[in-house]
Length: 434
Image 1 (cartoon, rainbow, N blue to C red):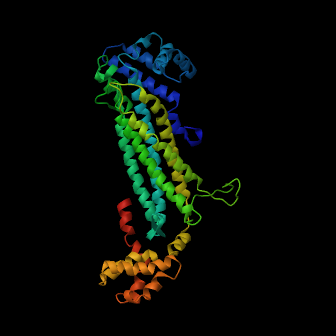
Image 2: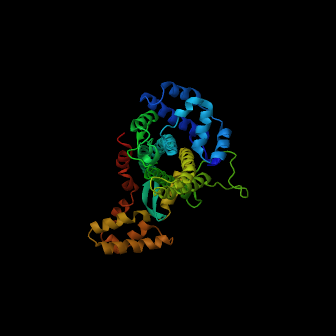
């Protein structure tokens, strides 16, 4: 991922030095397990730890790989140069995938922890802003068209609930990917005892893979990247909501515009939703990893490496992008400028039509058939769309309507508090009892 969309802590997980550190620790823990079993000398295991720790000479490793055309062998050769004669006990009974896949699990687990922390921060911001605007009346829209009144707090509470589900998905994905495989060629443990795998898993905070071939099954990874794709979808939904609310014709909320910020090189008046547009693009990028991850599941026999090039790209790119995007979204929501007066003006724009369903229900309860009630309400609503009067005035002038509902009854149906009477109940469902 390019530096523009990267944050240091997540990027560090995928840096070469960190990758080689994990590779080394896997090899060293295996040596410890073999020494405990009496297969190699304990002095050799100690020497591996003492002499093999990084930082590593990245240029030297690259130089060796140019000759060997094998990344793990290049690292092991560099390790042998550092350790000396005891290096003959390193990688005993193992295959490259034992190192690569187990290290990949560690990296994905560490990345998951950061992403879960990012979601926690976003949840805290959404909760605070939701309570701030719990009763800020606004219009709800379906198909982009005015529907009925809601509150801006309810909008944000809905996103809070969605990202709480996102957190649960990330926790599930973390648990599924946090597995260790030290099972040797084709996964039979012929040259390395299963207890070695159990020991290494324990040291790394992983669970042993119940059955590997020569690799950890890629359905685990597919589920992980699919979870990231769903989180990205939720992220884009909130970003899109903000973008729509910032449109000039709506302008109910907008991204914070900092002093000195410029919106356009040509038009000095512009204040554009650039951050949420950026988030929409990043969400597309993250979701783009899902199909390749799914296609990685169907590998040949006990293994091939068609998945390798895919994972070398999508793992850092998607986790770095989602980490950046979640942090940016939290910042956008934290600083979001909300315009309750504009919300009120937009709510009133259709002259009271947002109360049409309540009038319809009242007419049916007063004895009119639903079909006749619908026609009566609609024939009074349509002129309002064309700017010909206000809905309540037209209803009062309709003899068929007033035959069933008196003027005072009609006026009562336009009470906006009717639409907010269950806000506390919904908030209690989402946030728990206060």
